[in-house]
Length: 398
Ligand SMILES: Cc1cc2nc3c(=O)[nH]c(=O)nc-3n(C[C@H](O)[C@H](O)[C@H](O)COP(=O)(O)OP(=O)(O)OC[C@H]3O[C@@H](n4cnc5c(N)ncnc54)[C@H](O)[C@@H]3O)c2cc1C
Image (spheres, rainbow, N blue to C red):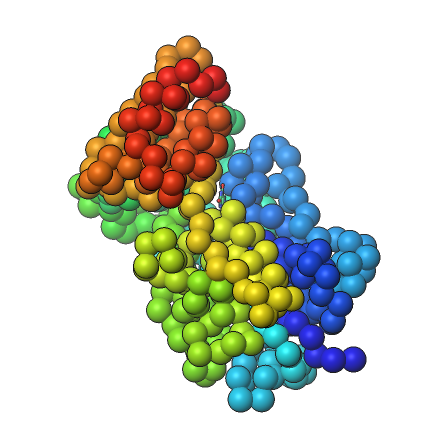
């Protein structure tokens, strides 16, 4: 049997690459090797599924893998890559060769700066189960980091009546992705749900006194909590590639076809990959679910049709569920500019539209307004004035 395609990492990007290879008619061998022993599962439910339910949503069962002719190898970590011999070394000492390699090792939660009992990060199912077990006995939660994960966990905890204090060194939550005007609205959303928000301050020391956690903040105040959730970002999982000599700059540097620069038979997809973006002419590592899947499909096509490669030039998209707000972020937002806001009170929905210096729509954010989000996704990149979209949205239902 030929070496075929080896996919390192069996989560969102890796599993979708394997599936897309089969959907596009690839008949060679497909092997997916995944470090976790859990069968592949989806990540977004880990911070969204109800606390009393199971957050596990399967991505690929053993049966489905067998039916698709995908060799799914769980509980094995790839430790080394030799590009000279097209060989991977696994943590059991075995060596695999590949014809095509897809690197889909994603990212790991940025570690919490404090190691004491009660402190959690959230990236894996095991993290989610540990955090949920802790929350089931907690009365007070301290959330460090008011980004997507921190906000979703605060929302889940408040839904169960757990008191929440949220700390972020930024003055406003989500302002890094949605700007100050919307950041102020997100801050208001947390406060409306009785979250004790401490923005513009850092956690200095954090200790466990045997019963509870005590955190001292940079403004001198002290917060006590039963449990702490730290959501301060993720780092690409590339440590195992240290000796491989692949180009790294904020993840694995790839062209717009997903090929790692300088290596035609090595591709990278998902959170680990930093792809060239033809639309903006820049390189970006995008840590979002839709991007992982779109890149997987693109790379699968390019492996099956090497003579007709297609680039991936996305209109970026991400969603987040916070309290009763379904938030969707689309395209590019120049945060030095104020967006045009369209808002309707009953039932509440909101759209913020960003435009360039010529008034052309480049991206936006919607709240509880999926149809507005669809309109924006279609409009971005098509030279459509933001004012035109704004006028249309006024009549668009939720
Ligand atoms: C809690 C949470 C909530 C999220 N919510 C949203 C959301 O609402 N909307 C959104 O757009 N995005 C969301 N995301 C982001 C989205 O899930 C990621 O963009 C997506 O998981 C990226 O997929 P990936 O396969 O590239 O990486 P990962 O999901 O990180 O998977 C990489 C896999 O590679 C494996 N691996 C790593 N190193 C090795 C090795 N050396 N050998 C073998 N296997 C290895 C890991 O075990 C892991 O399973 C969320 C993420 C998290 C953690």
